[in-house]
Image 1 (tube, rainbow, N blue to C red):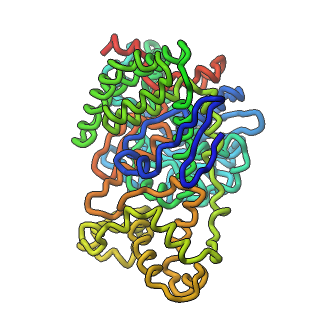
Image 2: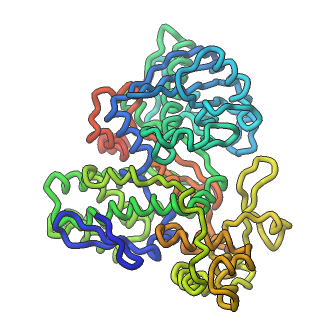
Image 3: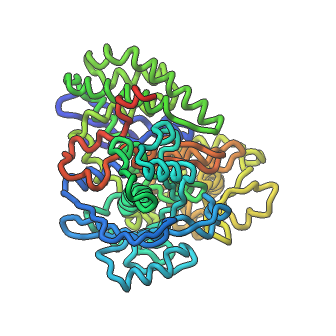
Length: 578
């Protein structure tokens, strides 16, 4: 049960004492959001639980590929009511054309997820357009559009070894973690794809980003099928398939930049629902009076596996190297005290409180994910509450008094009212949309002529401006009258009013300051996807791995929903091979 009391939320579990959700002022700071880890509520995990629960099957129905990987493949994902088809196109890409940047014009492979079964005419239409990506034309029958490049050194190594009848080097697999990395997975109406409203009422796609997660899951299968196929074509008499345990170590890479960061600002009600689900799950577990032996054992096992995962986390960015080192130290400290704490009364509340006093943000947020793991039956239902119908909260309440609006601004944006917005460092950055790729970008406000093109991604500054005009207002005391005189404040007024129902909608920091780190926004969103091994290459783009250690489509049959989640941390057996 979730009950609103003032501006806080309280969770009860059975007869356990109430536990409050962590307040927005604690959670909604960029450094903490940028330390989130995947959890039971991450979208990849939600997808795989559904695929197993509903007994989905995946079949490779076409694989017309010629060396060096040129052609078309089709994978059909069949559920209880519908079928979705991934159409994959392989290309012969010159080395000097391979780039992770969004401005790239060619890729090793391109993909579309199609609603239903595809016929030859549909494949011909897609073949003329999907390889062009943004420059092509797709229809409302296509749900996603994607592209990927090979991790050339590992890709070639795997083909060479398999063709020779040998298994690839496990250390190389572990170091890279993927054969292909996507540079975009578009959906929700972009470039003519199906609008979100077209599929939002389908149970399998109702949750956030489920079509995109299904796309990546199938791309992973394609990448492994491709290396095995190329090895077989190269040397039919000696080639072997990759051992299942080694296959599992490979996910799909992804290179993500600034284009993703504004999402968490532009979708306040949706973002709030994501945070509320996670915080509610944590509060439910913290409210438990004791941990059963099986829950203790599961937590301690996954703590060891999380430690193994952190120890194998590679990054070239000095900030992330420091964060990983801190995480390893945090998990070592947690291992020393966890067995005693979780065996006592109110174990999960006590261990979270201990972490708040003893660990850094990386360790604290890793712990949040870990304490949820033994309690799927208690928390997994929250995944159904992570969507949002944003149209229902779009209208502005013009009947609200300006005094009430002023109070709301003061409550929600008190942190912003204390900033000196005349300080050039506080307004150093400006968000805008590039003309070439229609992608979000961030520039230096005081060094470039970009302010006239600025996107409204500085709600803190805008709220401070709104507050100043409200204080000076001496007209009719209604929001409607105020906005007639100050229409420039409509955007932020809507955000303020939405906060009544969505208290976790707003990042409580300046998003245009000289020291803002957009990768914190990227990390937060990608953790909800279920990504791991974040490797920032600057403060504005990051590489990740998706579905690493997950089962492949042909392994779903026979798995149980309760055990399908066991892929999210590396198995302890890997420790013996390090």
